[in-house]
Image (cartoon, rainbow, N blue to C red; front, side):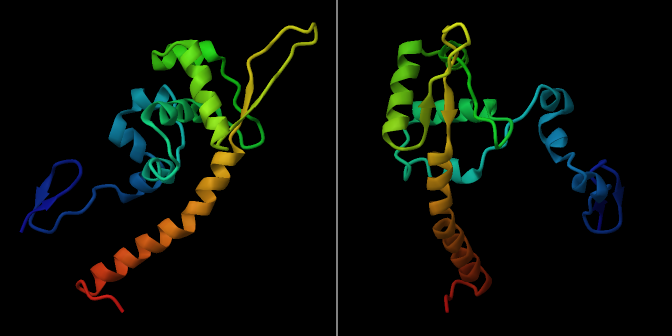
Length: 162
């Protein structure tokens, strides 16, 4: 029997990671994507947003806009405020398309646009309140978690459910 470690060394044992402490220390993303990629930044997105895209009624462009907004949302108490032009540049869409998708997301109750103004009455980019999206995801979470647990139970019992 050969041991294969994550350093590709072989011995006569089972497969084990060569440095389990490294995986536990938060370096998993570096190992998956590479350090240079992760140094450029990352964004935390709940898997529920991706898994429930259809249930939330999101088309691919609306989801892309939400993902971009999430990338600008760095702190829970501070709403993201990217310009429509910044979103347009990132997504390869016109600013008019961005406005349209924002209006649709607002209509669906997933975000609220908050107008910001400078002291000299100049216009700043809008702030985007994503609490509607968060609320809907929180409502979906128990159902999704229950389904996940039910699936585990079926798998554990060899296909027989209690």
